[in-house]
Every structure is written in C-alpha cells, then in structure tokens.
Image (cartoon, rainbow, N blue to C red):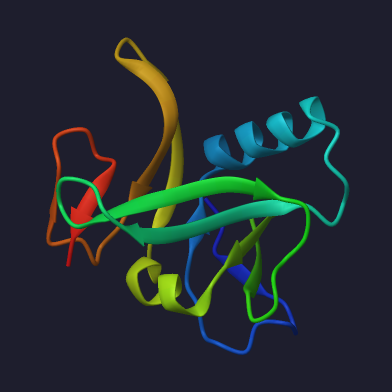
Length: 122
C-alpha cells in the first residue's frame, strides 16, 4: 500500500490510500473499458443507507470543478471537498474470497457500519 501523492490541483490536505490489490483491480477495469488518461475513480459519500451515509465509487471521465484530485498508488482519485471530510484517512481495498469480491472502504471516521459494509455513521 502506498501513501497518497497530491497534485497541484489539490487545494485541500487529503489523506486517502489505495492498497496494491485495489490499484491492480482499478487499472484492470480501466484498461478493460478503454478509459482515457483523463479518467479516474470518483470516491464520495452520500446520505442514505441503513447507517446514515453510503459510499460512492464510480469511474469519471474527468474531474469536476472544485474536485480534490489525488494520485494514489497509480490510481487517479476525484473527490468533492464535502466527501473528503468523511473519507480522510480511508483506505480503499479490493478483496476476493468465498463471500464474493469487491471494493471495501476501511474508514477510521466511521463510528458504526451496517452489516453489509455499504453504509456508515459518524
């Protein structure tokens, strides 16, 4: 796992990490979908879910105005300034096992999470 490298476009101090497994899977999916070099992974938080907030993880072709842009372990991340308040210190992991595979957020700011791990409260 590699710590973040912020770009000059990042006006806010942000600390997100991407594990080697997650970086490998993101890069595989980006290549498989022939995404352009301007594309990245949008991470965010939205209201909802059984615990109050849900995580958002999607591909985006380019950053939006005001986004925090990070280059972490070879993965370009886009995050809106409001979401980074809830995600600072979070590690994005990718796991595969008997109970399925997928991306997981390891968020030190979450006081509780739901059973499925898709939502949290602060």
